[in-house]
Amino acid sequence: MNNLNDLRSLVRGPVLLAGDDGFEQARRPWNLAVAQPVRAVVEAADADDVADLVRYARDSGLTVSAQPSGHGATGDVDGVILLRTGRLNELRVDPVARSARVGAGVTWGQVQAVAGPYGLTGLPGSSPVVSVTGYTLGGGLSWFGRTYGWAADSVTAFDIVDAEGTHARVTADSDAELFWALRGGGGDFALVTAVEFDLHPAPALYGGRMLWPAAQAPAVLEAFRQITAQAPDELTLWADLLNFPGSPALVAVDATYLGDAAEGRALLGSLDRIDDLITDSRDVLPVADLGSITAEPTTPGPGLSRGELLTQLDDVAVKSLLSAPIDPLLSVQIRHLGGALARPSDSPHGALIEPYSLYLFGVPATREAAAGIRARQQEITNALAPSVSGRKPFTYLAPGETSATAFGPVAIDRLRKIKQHRDPDGVFRSNYPVLA
Ligand SMILES: Cc1cc2nc3c(=O)[nH]c(=O)nc-3n(C[C@H](O)[C@H](O)[C@H](O)COP(=O)(O)OP(=O)(O)OC[C@H]3O[C@@H](n4cnc5c(N)ncnc54)[C@H](O)[C@@H]3O)c2cc1C
Image (cartoon, rainbow, N blue to C red; front, top):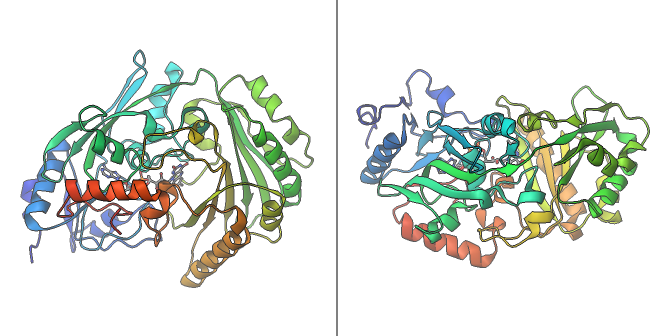
């Protein structure tokens, strides 16, 4: 068997093989609940390193999986060469053209810090340390998706290395089929070295988190439903049931409003009338500080998640959700979708017509704890069954689920044909392969 030692002289970035100092650390994903039985970890120095690596893998019958950080790690990397993209750190913002170009290792927090002072924003989600590329290849559900749609819909070009190890620039005009697949179909079709995308106006942003004791959950969810039923596209609300260790159970509403603070606050008036508010971080917010709203951990840790899409949030669904503590889950989050996300999108996922998403999250300290978390996720999903659509956003998929869950039958068939055509020997492996 090829011992991969010759990789060290082939690429200029660091190469770590089993037995090397630092290999264990290098192969670890951001989600520490996932083990990664990879053969090697290569940190590409630049896009030419990526191309050299792909040619090497193709000629050796090996597989490459790109993993900027591993928020979406599944463990489906047995025997692969893991490609780290952190050194592909180009970041250019053109405030006049309202566009950005980023290397495959750049995070959303880095983009927002540069774009924000120009009154512009990208389309990040809750975490500033998720990579633009990994998130966007899965479609990308943003705080501002209701105003501007899928993050992938704002992409104008991808720089890629194809399965032959050749560089290409992929746009809607140069290669419509691959361009379509890359805007949400995941990392199965090419290695992306850079992404170019439109930025959007965000001259003013208001947002933050309101937090109450769990006893207020019925009132908070009622207000959440009322506000989201008539919210303008610029207003986005997420509701959270929280069960932090050492703390009494809590309920929160996270909000952003792309506009004036007074207008945003007025739209949230019914939440202001709920008693016992513990904290309220709502304020004028730089777009670079979006991550502070939910304050998710920015360092690696273990997590078990399950995502669903909801066709409604009716009385029955709310009653089921609140019928028992969420324990042993850490959080249950309901995001309001709709707006531009529900409009036509020429991407693998297409229009996201479900008005809400559900995200069930737990931290598995032990194997038994993991089983308990999975069981509670299943229980809540069963209780909400009449409202669960069965489809999931690609970036909400969890280990054990398949990419077909994210796409309709026509889209998954098209993605599979593109995979067979572009990567017939399976040089690339996504975290959720389309042929699985
Ligand atoms: C705390 C947290 C918050 C999150 N919030 C949101 C959110 O608000 N909205 C949302 O939509 N998602 C969200 N996600 C999910 C996240 O978008 C996915 O996990 C996504 O995979 C990005 O994570 P990453 O950058 O670590 O990519 P990784 O997990 O490192 O990579 C994911 C996959 O992307 C592909 N890929 C990555 N880079 C390349 C490349 N250069 N070339 C080819 N393929 C590539 C590969 O198939 C890889 O397996 C969140 C996840 C976490 C853990």
